[in-house]
Image 1 (cartoon, rainbow, N blue to C red):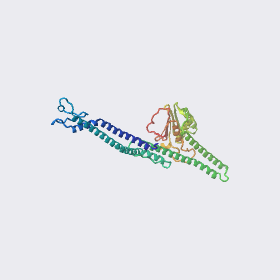
Image 2: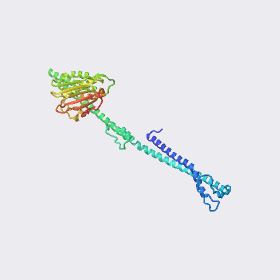
Image 3: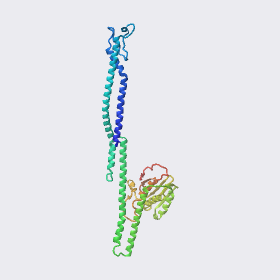
Length: 414
């Protein structure tokens, strides 16, 4: 059996070329055989005819097996003479011999030409198959050579537009996405290790230094409080990482969830942490979406916590739910560069460097929101609010809403 596509294409191309060549030769032989005898007979008759009457011009060359003779040369009975019959028989024999010799020579020459054509067609088919499959070989070698260390390599096929060019470009696009995913995974692992290492170092230092010797009860109480605070922060970080991993897996089942009720409950829960001078504006229309109630609660909770944590004194927090399936959370705060907005939706990314102070987040809130939105088939967009208010506006379009593109000026973040 043929084990390579090049061999299969060679057999296919070569067979087609041989069939075409053989058919052409057969057609030529058939057409020539049907009219060859008449042409030879006419030529031989014209050449070998000797008039019976002196001065009588020879008859014109006409096809046929009968010898044309002038009527006056045959006499009144129009009966061929023995000489004429003999001449006609000789002409017939000569015509048949020439025909057979010509057809035999034509057949021999045709078979030799077909043999040469077969060799050339097989070589041409092999060359054509190799040329056609060359991009496939490049793609195969690139795929075999790729690993985590050289995902930056691309095929970059230089070829005219066509199916193989589109295949190579599609493969390059897939490598771009793979490189982005692998890079994001590496950054996530590195950031997670860094975030977990910091509280562990603080706990170790507090235990080794703060509790060294025989510390007084007041110092022990302070160290105990610090260790509990660091443990709570670590627990929150681990829970956030687990939630992010769960949301990235998608949803196996969905059930109707009252999104407005979820927002009301989360607003009530976050109310204790809202400063007195922060104005909270809500506009919640009835809306039921398909999804997981627990994950949607985390989505709303993270949006509200982010809006409260990064707000300013005397600021404003707006929460709206529309019947078109749109959840919007907007807050005032520091002015954000629009170019930094997509980066804020990545894990462990913050607007400013972390200071490791109490109440500071791990930089996972918005990334968890984006992941939960993707798990529900929703589209998340984020936009920096202009000065002087500043802050951030986040909108989530759920499938239950009216599909369509986000308004102009907003950047999709998921």
